[in-house]
Image 1 (spheres, rainbow, N blue to C red):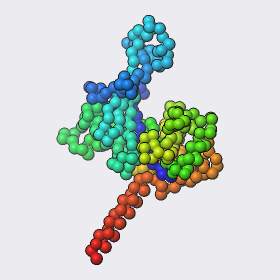
Image 2: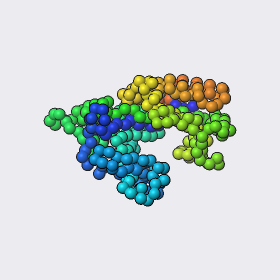
Image 3: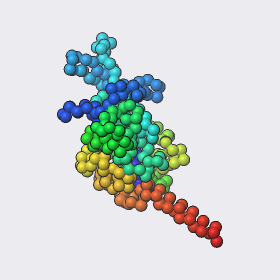
Image 4: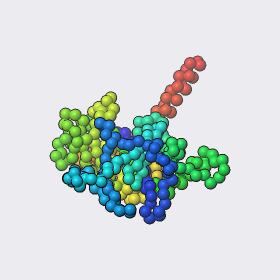
Length: 316
């Protein structure tokens, strides 16, 4: 079994209602972003709103909007998301008063797996300055990269908070089949997809800010890994508050998994499996030599050692 992570999200308010402070955005930041669209190319709508007076708006969800008559729908406008995709594939998006920085593909991108997650967030903020989203107002003449980096660090620490962090445990084929059988036979588990195709099993569907847990066949995304199940445990604000951590706490992958281990173990004890499978999962979560980043480093050392040995033999 292999432990890794896949996604980190941090978020900030455009305008904090308590402190009245604003996220430092360029005036025309929206022109550098694009609207989020569905698979058919249509703009995705999250809610509808209409203006009541100068300081008051009426907001309704999509389901409520569909129940209105044509007359009642008048003056309502659809609200969606704006986004910009960064160089490394991370996404910065806006929904209403909230901004989210989603750092994706943490484990299966060679440039990210060994990097500090906090540093990746910092680099993304620096790129957002270059992409005319975040406004940088240096307090000194001729600022350098170090000054810019420190400014972005302060913005992250003062304005952003952890939104989600996704932990993964990848099962070998022999355990994947056993776990899939147990999931398939449990009628109490919510599932998506057709039984004869790739299904996603939700053993815990967390509400906003809570932890969610789901299992699925990795072949859905990576064909050569078909048959290997992966469990995704996505932590939210409830877990982060319990752990008392922030973005600075999430550095290298192995350190991140150590920081969140108590929450992961908490969830492992709730999984709906036989005691034998539950024990094997818990045991894998407690290990440190099965963390993907450490395995990558060790493999690199092995390759380097083998290369050195070959060179020594060639000299003889």
